[in-house]
Length: 123
Image 1 (cartoon, rainbow, N blue to C red):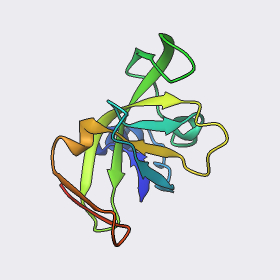
Image 2 (cartoon, rainbow, N blue to C red):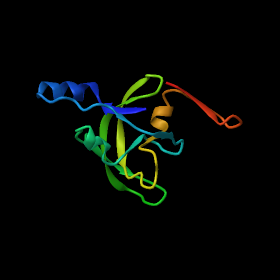
Image 3 (cartoon, rainbow, N blue to C red):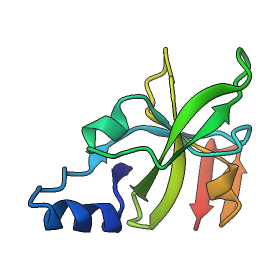
């Protein structure tokens, strides 16, 4: 999948005479335990994004850690596009850069076939 600035952010960058950064190819994982979508720290900076707010991040090892939130565009392999607000989180020790949380899953149909180790996500 790809992570990009929102259409509005890209338009604002162009108006300011800046070229919007190219979307970033990222590895993502569906996490039914995550309430919100999260991106790895540093990705928003690569896209020249500014925080749109803050949230409290709760993980299995910490509660209430302040985290910046960003408006982003996610482009899925089937070319589905979602613009949403994501939390920036330290996804240390992981090969992935994005967790797909229930905020995204709530807008679609997610089916996991454990016998064939396949999943389908229709947004």
